[in-house]
Image (tube, rainbow, N blue to C red; front, side):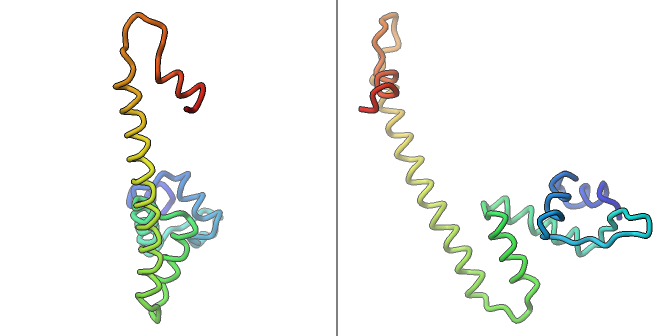
Length: 129
C-alpha cells in the first residue's frame, strides 16, 4: 500500500511516517518504481509506535520497545523496566506540575486584580522571590 493508505490505516500523518522511516524505526519495501510499499506489518508497527508515543515514550524508548516486541526470546522484565522508568518520569513531572500549580494559585490569590499597579504576579516574575 502507498503512504497515504498507510497513513489512513495507522492514524499517523505521512510526514511522521517518513520521519520514522528516516530514523530507521520502519523499513517499508520499495516498489520497482521506487515508491514505498507498506505491508500490513508496517502499519502494525506504525500503530505500535503511535500508541507508545501516546503513552509518553521517547523515540529512543519506542525503538527499544519495538526491538523487544520483535524479539520473541525477550524477557518481559526488560519491557517492564522501560515502562517503570517512564512511570517514574511521569510521577516526577506530576509533582513538578503540582508545585507549579500551587505557586501560581498562590500568586493569583495574592493579586487583587484591581486598578492599582502593584501586582504580586509581576513582582514574582521580576524578582523571583
